[in-house]
Each structure stands twice: as C-alpha cells, then as structure tokens.
Image (cartoon, rainbow over all chains, first blue to last red; front, side, top):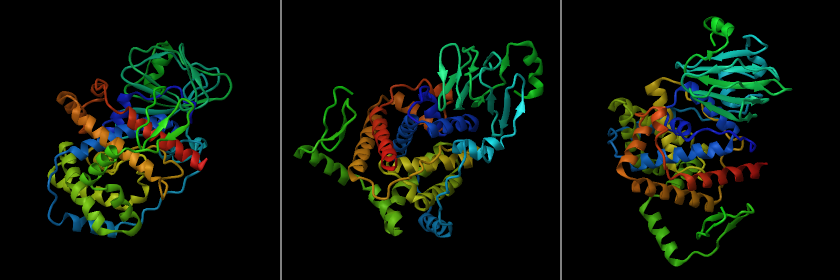
Length: 213
Length: 214
C-alpha cells in the first residue's frame, strides 16, 4: 500500500527488530508492516543492523558434536512447506490471532454503537479490535503509556490529522484527543495500550472497570 | 535525490524515478571489490548450494562461522550456556530447512541468521509469541539478479564499517538494545544510525518484487 501517511517511529521499529518489544505492541507493528512497504524496508534495515552485530560479535565455541547433532535435527525435520495464503479481509498477523476473518470476530458493544473485541497476548499490553460507526466519536480519553492505533478499514480524524487504512497513530501520555470515525464506512482499528484508557466522561469512567476497556 | 552520483556497479535513482546502471567500473574499484570478496566467504553462494543441492560441506562452512556467533549472541541476551548451545543448533537447522525463504536481494546471510536467532530467543527466553509481518505473496525469486545481490552485499559491508566507526558509547548502546537490555523509551534515545542507504536498497528490492509480480 503506497498511500500510507502515518508511519512507525524508529524506536518502535528498532525495538521490534531487536526483539525487545512486548507481544501486544509487536502484533500492531507487524500488522502495520504488512500494509506498508516503506516501514517494511525500514524494519529490514534495523534487522541488517542486528546482522552486522552478530557478524562482528565474539564467538563461543560450540560443543564437539554440534554439527552432527544439527545435521540430525535437519534430517528429522519435516519438509518445510510454505503455508498457502488464506483468504481473509484481515492482514496475516491479526488473522492468526483472530483465527479467521472480520466476520469471525466476537464483538462486544461498549456504548454509542462502538464495539470492541479483546485479543489475548502473553503480556500486560491490552490489544483490541475496535469497530466505530461512521460519524461516531470515540469517547475523549487521555493515555498512560504508549498507545498504538492502526486503521484496518475506513478512516478516523482527530484535531490534526486524518488516518486511513494502514495509517498508524503513535500516541503518548501528552496527547489528549478526540478521534472521530469518518462518515460512511465503519472504521475498524487495531489498538494496543500499556495501561487502561482513562476516559474523561463520567459514565465511561464508572463503566470502565466492568467493560474491561 | 537531486545530486545522485553514479557509483560503479550500483543503481542510481534519478528524480524521474528511472533507474540507471552505470556500466563502467574503474580498475581500482574492481580490485578493491575483489579483495573484499576474497576476505569474506561468499555466504550467499553457500546458501544457494544448501538450498539447491542439500550440500553438507557448504552447510558445514556456514555452521563453523555462524553457530559460535549465534551462541555468543544468545548468551549475551541472558541464555545459559546449555540453552544457548541448544538454541544455536536449532537456529542453524532452521537456516537449512527454510533456505528457500532467504532473499539475498533484501538481506545478507548474517541478517537472516540474526532474525532466526532473535525469534528463537523470544520463544525460548520470553515464552512469547512473535507476531511476524505477512509474507510477501511472491516470495524470494529463485534466480535473483546478481547485480542486486552484490549491491545488497556492498551495502551490508558499508553498514558494518559504519557501525565500527561509531563512537564506542553509541555502539555500546546499540549492542545493548539488540541484546535486550534497553526499554522502548531508552531505545528512543538512540539516534544517528547509518541506515539510510541500506534502507533505500531494500526498498528498491521490494518495489522490484512488486512490479515483477504485478
């Protein structure tokens, strides 16, 4: 996709390339890279940096029978088959976590026509799919920690920018904004947060502990 | 790029988006390149022999260079010696079993080894899944353009040289990031990485793959 306007930061790409980014954020990064050749090239350049470090690194001697043992692993390994591409309206990383397409997502209504589906990961990052009807605002909220919001379908706008398919918003604590889904198509986003969202409105704040947002 | 300078044997992007290949290569540059090629094993050629002919001697050469480095990398990342040994063997086995997934127009063999080792590390040390980007549907070409392979290799060599020229403090910070000692916000402080040219080269390879298949 060449019309992506909002990209990943170097810090996110380097954290993901080095393997230190937690699984929840890594899922959003991998999904953006699936939709953006520019960030794929940037990611692969950070991986080249890792390759340069491995190449220049000290070495630690392998055990005497290591090559033999490795050949035995190779001989025992099943022939690697490239998986057949699965038809889905979701990029592969999300599809793998959902186990299917958008129609397989189990949505829960969270008010105002907005729906969400939590995605389980092994760490404390909260990852969710959000479905926001055109013209609807997501409740105004601030952040604690890093929040990534990637548009899969449709578009949203905040005070400054428009975010369409493939665009990612990287938000930190100092950003306080009111994203609104564009009129028309329902906006589907993949979002990861480090800490629970903190809503300003009274009702969402009361409901927050119960709906797990 | 409005001030594109033609480097022998390398492609140059012009403003019009046309790719020129400079045909002349002066003797000095050629000699330098041959010296460099002789100093480094041709890992890509060895990988092709593993992929196409299941060549065990070629694999043994790759193993003796990369396995001890992977082991050191894993130990610096916090693995015990026995875990690092076991994982390094797995990594090298994967190098063979997935050899047809390696694309030498986008990555050096070192880089490919690094990505396999990193994924094994996340699996073994952190017990987390590693979400991977969607594969390009057309995969690596069976017979990539040798000029593209050479160009990527030259960029990789230049990157290695640029990294070793960095001030010790900055290089140390980069190493710590890749051994998993830095948080995301600490990584945000790492700046001035010499990645611009290799990124452009990889982007070009991605665009070519898209056009070849489009």
